[in-house]
Image 1 (cartoon, helix red, strand yellow):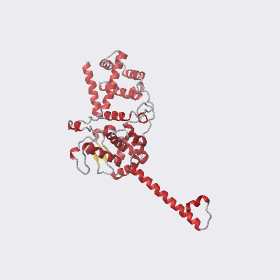
Image 2: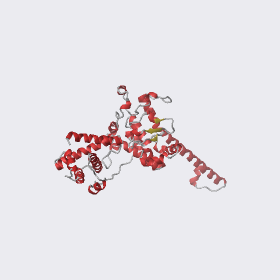
Image 3: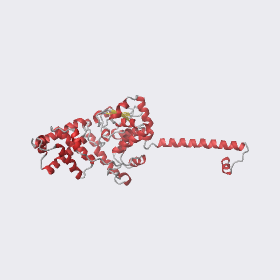
Image 4: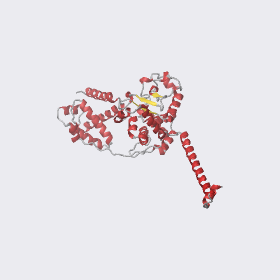
Length: 378
């Protein structure tokens, strides 16, 4: 095998990985793992990648021992257990793709992967999310509202088209296409009134969307693509460019907005920022799970195990359960808060009136009232 053939083999393997998941992140992670493995065999055995493959095929070297030494090499280099696991999985897949048989039980008995240290993340609260709203752009604010209201992944949000959103449904329904999901399964989720209004305002401001009109010219619009008018004029065919406004751009933009605010830019125990897009998805799972049940929350988030149960529910029941969770998902709807306060005041007034009636009744019966109650008769 030549070096050129080896490079082609790597690319062919990565292409096969992409076909399964259509995830560029997966192929990038596996590519990184193969690079680490290539460097490892050069340092450990003074061999190139093609030479180590040939030596394994000719049974001159033990494939399991090599993978075991690779794990030790990465661990000594201070790599995190989660990274080690995915890099080894990618390398094992590449070796199998190269024609080397690796049996799961033999691998499991020989290769020990370091255990992942479980570190708690500080959960987001409504107070924190409100502070984020006050420090980010209108676009990111809308994306956060969509994320917290729907449980969608950021990779799904950035590939949403206007045709995926049904504003006529109550609550607003989002149909998530199979080709943009991690599991390659289509599903549906919903938006709160708060998120719906924010999305409508965003579409009106940046894309001249009009309520109660067909907006046919916008149906293939990637909602969260670049909003610069000059950029959009030079990139009319948005259907071919789903990654123009990818998650990394949004992630970096949000970081820039909040990096100078200590309470929002602090790190969790695992070294990751407290505020990140996946945290909004976790917030959704917690809130909806507490309000109407975890199974329903997991299904809306697209976790495969729960989807069949969800789709056996009548359509009306799906909407009903979401509407039960909606008040808990609403972040900054002060109208609802004022309504609740009004109800409390009305209830307080009723209690006070009943108390006065009781005191008056006691007084009419010529019962002597304690001094502390005399003031209520004035």
